[in-house]
Length: 363
Image 1: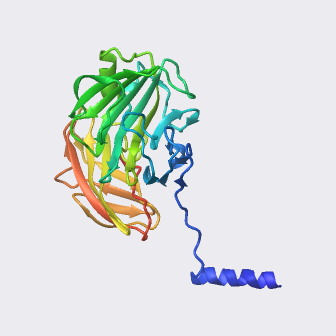
Image 2: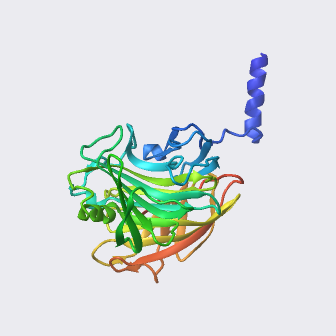
Image 3: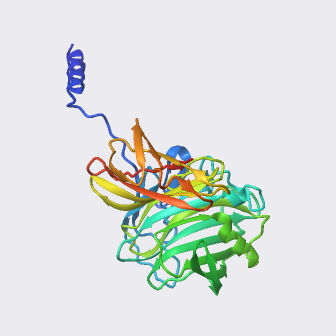
């Protein structure tokens, strides 16, 4: 009878709202090679401390990113970095995501449609780079070390570090100027270092790989096995964050911050500011990637539990359940090919919750 009374008491407390239901907490990973799958397996976040024995922890954002919460590294800047905490699509040592269509041969008809975007935040100290790491192999390999080419894209670097090898030229790609570096460590390592730092990048994979092939460092017969974005810390690094990441295949699925890469519409979003109980997302950019004018556009994205939009500008919106639907206004709905429109919004969230919206799609 005592158990029955306890059950009745718990039921009453739930009825009165005095017992909270358990809240899901995103994982904090401190294991050297620990990882977590997010967004139903679409992406994997990995700690990947391969070059040091010092402590490193990352706080995973289930909506598409992570933050380095502890980084006690003090590696020599003339040697290798301590690790590569990152988020990726594809296969890394047999750990594969879902829906990436990778490995994919660089000569395949769908390769030109592969696209990725990332948004990052940097702290004021430490020695690190903020970079993409794209892996190519002569075979459609899903496990072990790739032996074709490692294509790195450095958005930012702090401290006296440089890529493997030596500088071999300059390239103007994805709307920016890049130093081009080449080295070989058993496979070709081609690094593109942005001449001015950036916190975000939205690009087609072939934009850079075409340049790699033209320089003789890669082949169209090779296979892209994974697309990764994160940081290589040498010294420190706590506070570095990937706010959002996307990889799309051109098949119409969403991909986090980068949104829908299929059809005639693409969307990217940038977190402009955050605080304990809210954030501002601006700009959210809608781009017409088709060949004819887009007459009106719609953006949808899931709103994390407990979040609420408190204001939006340059667009109108409705909320149904956890889905936000944003529609263009008369003055910004007509987009010529390659033209874009922007809007922004502010939202509140439970105090201490670190989630931000992701999974943007547009039509």
